Image 1 (cartoon, rainbow, N blue to C red):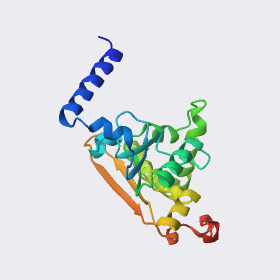
Image 2: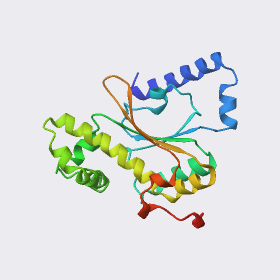
Image 3: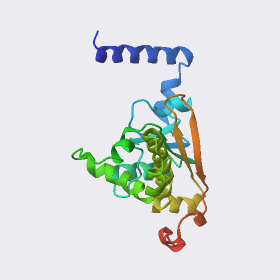
Length: 213
């Protein structure tokens, strides 16, 4: 049996198991989607949102890209964000990085990766902000892991700079923004920050005036 055929068999077994536990499970999922969480995570196959958080399908709305970035020109990310915030009205957004991230490691070097260079540049900009701190770390793995943390913090800041988040904060005092890092070696999450829905948490230059909403 090849790996692809195995996936289909595993899907069938999973479906049957869910129905044995709850015969209405899929019927409920098909008729509503009301997650409280938006997950912005890394595309790394070892960092699955539902398994890490012990949640079922339907509980977490998920967007993933290389190194869990919030890029202000990324229409894919912004579309997901707008839908999650304005239509699904999620109460929490989690930006989750992971230690040992390959995208972060690549951004710390000078190797060219073709088209990927354009994406990694966004991470390099984060490194530039914290260059003195990162360069002072001798161990290469620790250097990568510290940039993983700093990158998560910066992506949380990039979220609250968007008009999508600021309008929601103005209209319904939600969502909260959380920064996490997942440990591949122990399966545990480290919480780095929580940003409450308060305009004072946004740097004034990025703060839209209330009459815009």
